[in-house]
Length: 285
Image (tube, rainbow, N blue to C red; front, top):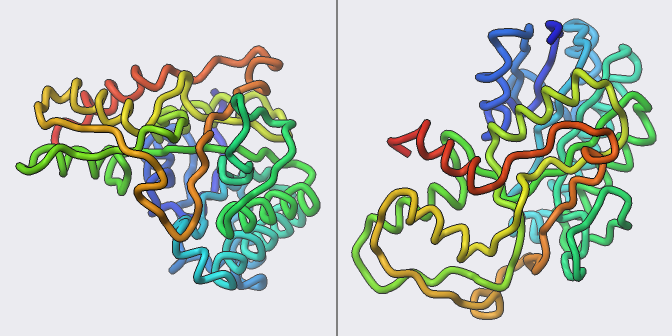
């Protein structure tokens, strides 16, 4: 694998931290966050990318608080749409390849099968709509791009569903109630980082789904966490309707990795294997 000069936005986020940790030994990684690079400021964005001259920009920075996006509409679009457009324009001007991270929330989430990369987006939330606007900006402003959609993410440092479950299952109390009617692909940041590394080497463009293989409900996910950690606290299933949230949660978050298959690229690991590896490598989480 050849060494590259890579700038990462949102490098203090959960995925950004993993990318910095995994890639710094081989690539020249320039880690930026909001204090180093305000992506909502077009001039600052152009200036930083022009001065660094990265071969690749991995754009992780985003407003990801799904419920807050519903009440902070302008802020969601300022970061996820305008900020992403600024990064895309700056990359194109400087000849940098752009890898932008997106989400399953661009889909409606009520389909009967996993969504593949050519399915028509139809977001139901402000978060999903603002991320889709960012995808459109990337495609329009930076032809040399790759959009990687991820979902149900967990990784070192959190915050994530895994961290929440591990905290709650060590406490005494009534059985935990976990939603059983939402299905997705639990995915580790380590698996995403490895998948992105493979894609960087191929140089393919377009859209790719990078969630782990297999599917589970949040209830299934919680049970596997408890099994691997040998916790005994009882958990029961509940429905989405019992826990209404400001932003509707998709019943179907499953993402089909069609692009990986068509390009004969290595598949993503099974979610159970990725979870076991994460808990094994992070015993104190």
